[in-house]
Picture 1: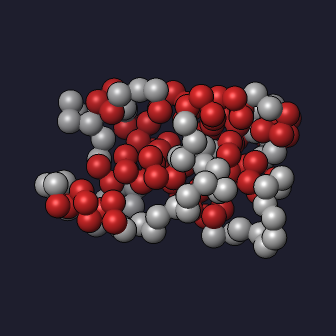
Picture 2: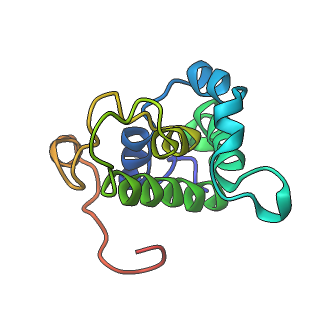
Length: 140
């Protein structure tokens, strides 16, 4: 990773998808509800719970310390959150496995809605001289 930091689109989308603060996510990951949801490979920790612990590390790291592997995980988080937000169940979701699973990935759907890709944040980055969005290539 260069000293400039991660791709601005990846970083922006990650910070929009992960709407829980590090302390909030850390407390959530300690709950029984957090540990009970998600796909448990081989009976161990769920994939989402493991991801939540990794997200904590990403949130606590400076941008210029992020590796290519970190960026891949950030894109995975964004994809997961977007896919699952599109599958929102009807009714009250406060105490649902759907919400708890998303929270393991750092997104509480009861907070502000997830912005559309390329929305106002992308426009603001463009105004401030961010490089244009790449089309195609790895990870796209």
